[in-house]
Length: 468
Image (cartoon, rainbow, N blue to C red; front, side, top):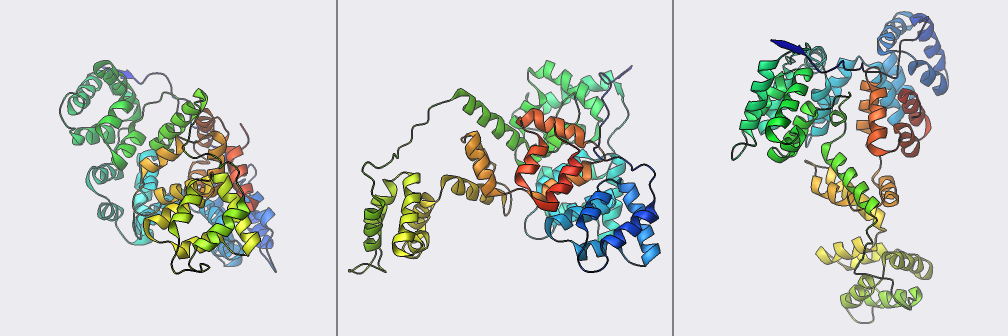
């Protein structure tokens, strides 16, 4: 006996459509003129390329080569720079080639960008997977599966290999018997036993269709008394957990936001909003120093440093006493006073005077709080792996204003932003926009306007397709 998946899933909606009355030769001519001579007409390039579908852009590439004997992408790279260049060049590549390059970048060099692997492998159809594997093998003359296996480990690696086969069921006809069987197996592999049988989760989530999994998760919640997301978070961990959540997170209204936004960030954001809404009064251990006189403190700090001291060595006790007994706002006044009074950088002098853990603590205390948080966020997401605990700790304890300030300090993850905007603009970016607004109570358009600038921002806003 079989049954259809619950309800019709509304279609994905992209923000970029095919341009009516398209003429590849005329577009190629216009682009050539825009890049001819000294400088380039970025306005014309931006306007033209962001209003054509990817299929139309591929035809423009061919026409440009035929008419002028030149490679359009090479000419664009020569004329454009920075993030604007990266974005425009990304738009010019066929989707499979673009995905292949993003995966190559994710596994090359030191460390692995697991976030990129999760985003691409969890959200592409079987056909798209086959095309990107073929493109990777052709462009880089290397086997994608072997490269990912060499760069990942354990259950995360196994799930990546399963997804790379591109054999997930895609029809919407679901066996009720198989639904019940899969739900029972997932429960027995996790909640019902000590430890977790990860292979069962990999087999079921890695091979069943989305429609089938929706029904399995409904059945699972009846058996386990909890949602599948809660079980996955409890039974699995690390990047493997994030990958499984991206593949299997149940949501009857597509797209599944978990395919594009890390689960830890969603959790952190929600917790932060909850703490902010409760309006808990924070009580710190450091207050403004009564009778604070920055010019007096500057003189004391100057005398405490061996470069200025009348006796040898650094008076660490005086430095500790002053820095730890002043609020962060007062410390910033000290830095300004030190500069105006002595013409020197207090941070640089402290760095040269102090070392080890004491130096690190004092320098951290002297930073503006948002700058310190931004630095910690940067450290948490750079290098090998991600320190999710640091991300959650910082994001769940800050107010909206503080988050906005530290976002400015931490900067925008342009690589991920470009990848999503380029790869989803013709597929489901309008859905992502809606999900983004629902989740974070701010539009994607507004975030781009606030965090990006210049031609780069204008291309992103065009791809975004409007304000919500």
